[in-house]
Image 1 (cartoon, rainbow, N blue to C red):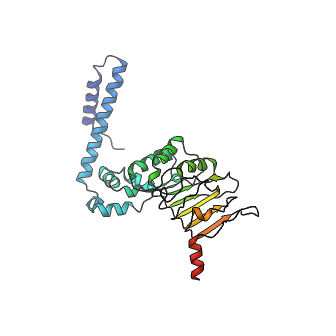
Image 2 (tube, rainbow, N blue to C red):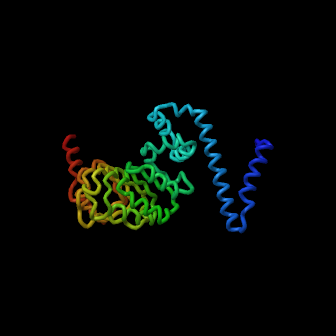
Image 3 (cartoon, rainbow, N blue to C red):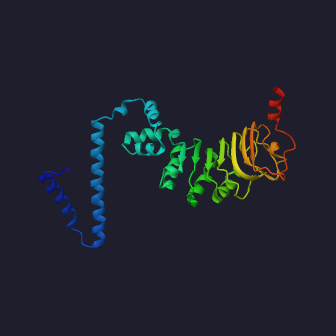
Length: 276
């Protein structure tokens, strides 16, 4: 460790002593000590900034677009670290919301704080959420996810009770950017009731649906954008292709002799058969 020269050490000590010697009580002493620390921290930050300005980072000479392209090779944790390197790097990282459009909870220990950072920095950009961990998200995380549901592009959840509860809430909202909905399959779970408001209006871009055991909505509104479907078979599948009329690839698991099968094939499947 490099130590201060003796004359500078004495000068700094004398300045601190001068600031503290007139303090009369313990409460004031704490306030003055906090002020002294703030002054020292600010001075260090100013010196670091001056050093960085004098020794230009080669990356800072690149156009912003190329710098952003370099950051796009990093995982989210790496981008967060890069945004803390310097003021210049932070400015670049925050200038492009698409750098923050993907979140994987398994990559973080403090995933609540990381999730909050992603939501803040992605702004209105559609984003992907992967919660591939059994650790249950806090109530705060659930509230943030529901509040930003309109920006969801991909949602991947584990198979457990809390994920079904969260899905019930999310699927009852408008999801204009959602393209992929996936929850790990597990046939021991209670059946998830798909909400009546599922429709082309609430989910206009939904293409792929992978869920465990479900129950179809009581009132059917077509979700015509879905082309891939992998479900735990509802006990009553008769309206399945009314709900997903243009699906092209279908997998139903745990079909039994008691399962009520669809009235007719989806229109897209009939068209494929007729072209053969």
